[in-house]
Image 1 (cartoon, helix red, strand yellow):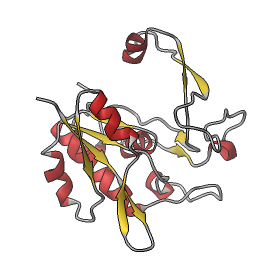
Image 2: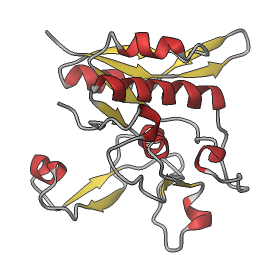
Image 3: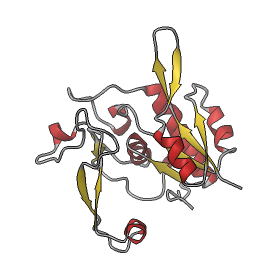
Image 4: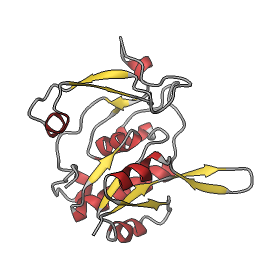
Length: 201
């Protein structure tokens, strides 16, 4: 049976109504990888997170707006983008529930930043404002399918290196934030000190 993969989404305000939105790349990629994608809308009732995660086999935390910087102990700088505290709370609740169940979690863009913050790490609120000699990570008017810059894989014994079979790959990047302080390890205080499996099974 194909695994059911929950995909976090966001609220997209429109003139006549608010819509639940998600890039079509996410469900398509899950289908191509052999899973069944399930769009999970943002919810203000955090108790539903546990019930939602109980019904899925894996969780994909998607990209989107910045995380509120107070979640990692900082005040916003001028270059911070828009953030959505309701979405933050909901996705942190999903992440905690997934950790408690021990199901695989994959974070993409904002999603991996949220995982780092949930586990005790911090973020650069804006790469260009807070890092010198930073490569371009948010090209303007650039197709998402076009590869933009190189990434070096320094851990040759990693799962990524074994899957790709190479030391360098070309990727695209559409973000202005990144991990600053890496979370201390695979144990998250928010989920009762249980070990957290982040890789796909």
